[in-house]
Length: 71
Image 1: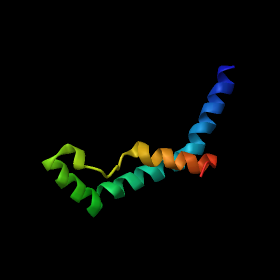
Image 2 (image 1 turned 135 degrees about the vertical axis):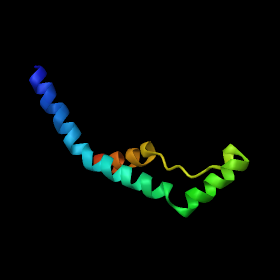
Image 3 (image 1 turned 90 degrees about the horizontal axis):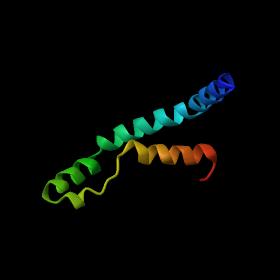
């Protein structure tokens, strides 16, 4: 039974790995963008002004939605 769960878990990881890599790259590109740099400099004045979300989780959630077909 553990072997079956191991195989299923491995398949799940293999299927979502390209989405995770894509989300990581998009997150990195976002962090280097001019919009994020401007938002970060505004956040120095007040933390609520940092409105650009470049988190990995944000992009990963969107990739999983595309993979599952919810979008």
